[in-house]
Image (cartoon, rainbow, N blue to C red; front, side, top):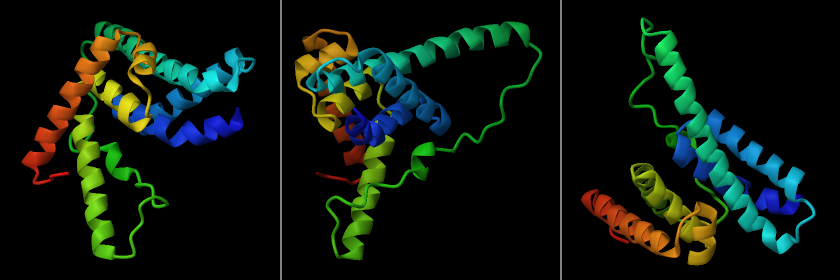
Length: 183
């Protein structure tokens, strides 16, 4: 179980970051999902655990947004005279993440810099996708789940997964093309 959690931890954090755009909340979501998996499904066969974890992670992300909506409703009602949070609109927590340096490392610093810039552009573009498209894209292409597994993790039909993935790929290609990136 611990080997599985160590393997999926970074990718799960990225998924949560793309969804909630808050580093602390993303860490909490991943930790909650890991706890739920170990507390409720430790007796399951190891082959079933990656899919269960993905479903738990997605449900935990959705639960966060539900709680946030309820809190925001009550906060708005109870503090109608309060001021909005003065956060920096340009802050992007994805800029604080380091790209993995243990894979596809080149000896050429210029090539490494270019690859890091492209990864940054891809991550920025991913964060601009609608939530369901981003979720489908990450599960299919980053987590390498098949269509049926992605549909189970997202709680939708296989056709919806295909539609979301197709739209995400086309939108990402357009966003990257507009920034001069051709893959």
